Structure formats: structure tokens, C-alpha cells
Image (cartoon, rainbow, N blue to C red; front, side, top):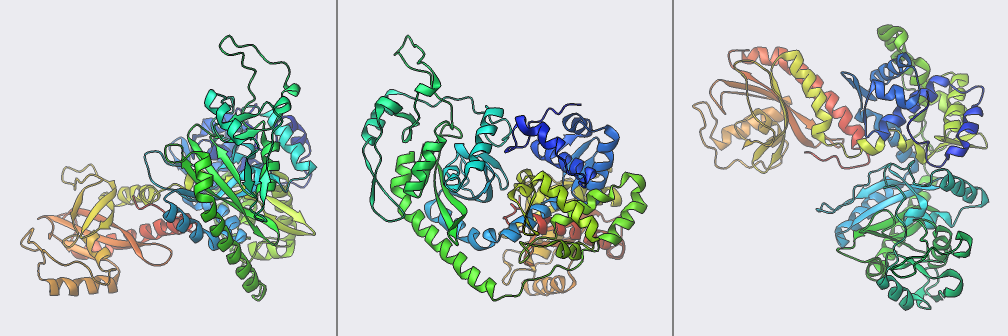
Length: 633
């Protein structure tokens, strides 16, 4: 059955058949199929029906069912009726790459500080064959804001970082780029960007801007000298993209000009046709611009961050034409961007020096054998052991383990060397691992396995399926809330259908002090606000000293039980939700009518289930929040 999804960017449709025929004899077929399912789910923004996966992958429905059952057992997808949904735990694959890369840990804070200072979005990107892939986004929240996500792949020719990475390309990389452009003329293999059907705009204002630009001097960021760029209009025609970038491309190769009754215009090239010229300019200038190459209105200024003489990543300041033109972005922000890049490069040098004096870590065995044994016993033939093993190989890499040989991979995963070898051969064939001198490294393509749609997941979205499961087990209402000042705000909610049940809508705010949700969050504060303690019921604690003692006990016991203090007849027990560093960021409660359970029964029956649920929420939160800030709402 043919696939209706575009081939992977960077491969090109013309070579797809050859690549498929060249599958190594020792490759693990179930791993290839499982990764295909994950990629289709990623392209579908994280959700697809099982029948949709059957159509898009060309796999038999029984195979899709077995793959999704195995991925669900691993915690990488969630089966919701007839749909498969990517789960936050899948991000541990991308986290392995980001941890091994080191750059997010070392440079994210610099990018965030630059975004705060400039009040513009700032991103970090790495090269991924003939594309660029984001590894960090510091986005400003505006009506017009950047929608790219960590892990999104963009065609190099339609970005500001692309020409900078292309300065290090050789003949092989350029040949791959040309092949992909020919095979995918509309960039359909890059779901994160609009299709490449828009021609380069060429208006009267653009002609004037180009005339001003020809012969103008630029400052070379490498040596500070003036660099003069002169265009021979008799050859190149001096087309411009938007209002600033020059397309130095001969029109003779494109055929004769097409008549236009309006002004005798010629046929216009499409976006990206000037990429080789932009690369030459970026090589000389040391920086690059994107003047609305991705879509109208979006402009960006980029500079490379180098380590040991090579480009480690590219940092970009991204804005909108309502705030800056591309030329204004360059003239205004380039000096500050140079300073930020210098600080980043200094950070990398210092880290490299420190790392050279630190012994390399070895990961402890993952306990895979025990887990796969239990999974096989539970799922029987529905569990695909070779798929689970192959994905575990990716998690062998990480901080201090960027390069591993076969023996080290086998030790980290607990797999036999022969099994680890076949998995590595398969991952190398698919482009997720590179090998050099018997040493393996992860590639940026690993981020394409679910990271983009999951990188925008909020805490409320992470918690939602867990809240539903808990409510179904206990047959009581379950809620998630965050603390806002001296109030709690409900951000997640699953209600029961009882005649007598607790009805509160998402977004509702209540005072924190008389609620179990509020108390477990107040207990984490060094100085909780305990003013204006009004008696909402005869049982509401209104004495600050007494309430402080209650909060001390809550902090020690790790839960709060509130009995009819917010409303007569309402009983609730709550547990805090903590981020990776241990700070309380939210709370989950189970609420019921007081006739349903005694306080003692709440502690004995509800509290263990509640704690287990919060533990699962925290596990997902810690994975999702390792290299990004997880929004609380």
C-alpha cells in the first residue's frame, strides 16, 4: 500500500526507492516499522487514528496494532479509543540527543537572557543534513508570535541559519540539497513551513531598495573590514527577496522572460533559488538574514556559534515586519548579537576545558530485560521486543555519553552485543545515528520522533489522562490547580456523573487557605500569605497561628485533607506536584461529598491512589521539562 505522507526531508523522493532497497541485511524490521509509526504520528501533530496510521505507513492493521501496543507499554503513546496519541515520555529520546549535545544546557540561559533584553524571540538551531532543526526556543508571547517548536525541521534555503551551515558543506551536501529541491519542489516534506509555491516578490519599492543597496559596504564580522558587494545587473538582474536580500542568480539559465501586460515583468524565481548566493554572502559577512522567506512578515538575523573552529549551532533573533524590517533588524541588533555569540563561545570553551578534566560517565544498565519479560507476559504476541530494545538503544546516549562504542551501548542497555549491534545498524540506516571509527553518535533527526508536537505540551495536558484514570478508578471528581497569589486556579478537571458531585469549571479561582489544593501549595512557600482569613463555614480555620501549624504538618506529611472548611458537606484530599528541582508547581485533589467517605477512609483508600497518580504526572513532567519550561496552564 503506498504511503500518502511525504518522504523524510533530506532524502528526496528520487532516492527513496534506492534507500529502501539498500536496507542492511542485519537491520531490525520491527524497529524500522515502529519508527515509521512514530514519524507519522509526529507529522500528524501527535494524534492519528489507527486506520490512518495503517494508510499512511502502508503497514497491515495487525502490525500497526502490535506496534502501538508496544509503544503504549513503553509509555511513548497513549491509546485513546481508536486513536494513538503521543505521550510526553517519548521525549526521553530527544532528551538523550539534547543531553549528549550539551548545547541546550550551556547556551539556553544565554538565549533566554538575550530574548528578555531585546524583547524578541531567540532560537538556537543545529544543521540536519540539508535542513536546520531547532534545539531551543525563547518565544515572546504576542498576538503575532513565533510558532516553531523544538525539533521542527526547516529547509536550509528558507532560513537565516541555513546559509551559515551551508558554508561548511562539501560537494556531497550540495548534491543532496539539489536532489531534494528537485524531488520536493514545494517543500511538502517540511510540515513546519508553508509550501514553497510563492515567488520572490519584486515591486517598485524593491527596485529602489536594490539600487540603494548595490555597491553598498558591509562590515565583515570576522575582521571588521568593509566588504563591498557589487551586482552586475546586466547579468543578475538584481532581484530582491522582500526588501533587503539580493538574489545574484542569472536569469539566462531560467529561460526567456515572460511578458506581462502590466510592466513587462519576467518570470520570477521561487523561494530559495538564491541559496548559493546567500551562502557566499554569509561566508563573507559572518551573519545571515531571513527576509520573509518562510512566510510574509517573518524576519530573522542569525550568527554562528563556533566551537573548535566549527559551527556548533546558530543563534537567531526573530521578529515581525510590524516591529522591524530585515535591514533594521540587522542594523539595530547585530552588535548586540555579536556580543551574545562571543559570550556563548566563551561558555563552550570553558565547558570544554572542564569536561576534559572530568572522567567520562558510564550509564547503569537500564533493567530492560526485566521490563521486557514482564511486558511479554502481559501482552503476549502483541508485544514487539525488538522494537522496545531498539528504541532503548537511543536512551543509552546522554550527558557525558555523546560518543559510545558498541560495548558501551550494550553495557548501558543490558543488551547482548549482537542485539545492540543490529539496533545500531538499523538506526544508522535510518539516519538517527552516525558511526565513525567504531564510535556512534546520535543525530538531530532523533528530535523528529515526537519532540515538536510534545514540546508545547502544558502541565494541564500532561496531567489530563492521569486525572481521568484516577477519577474512573475512584468514581470521584479529580482536579489540578496552580497557585496564583493567595488563590488557587483550576487548570484541569474530571467530574463524576453522580447526583451529588462537586461541580467546578476550569479557570475557577478560590481562596487558597480553606482548600486542600491551596494548602499543599502554600506549605511549600517560605512565607505563605495568611491574611484575610474569612470564615466560609463554621469549620474554616481563620486563626493565622493555627493555620501556620496546619501548613507545617502538611509540609511534613506531604498531603492535605480539608473537611467542610470551604463548603459544608465538601471533603477533599490533595497532594503537591513537583518539578525536577523539587519545587511545588501545582496540586491534584480528589473531592467528594462528606457522606461518601470518612476522613480516615480518605487517607487509607484515596491517598495512596492519589499519590501514585501524582507520581506518574511528575515522571512525565520531569521528562517534558528537562530542556524546556512546561507551561503550568
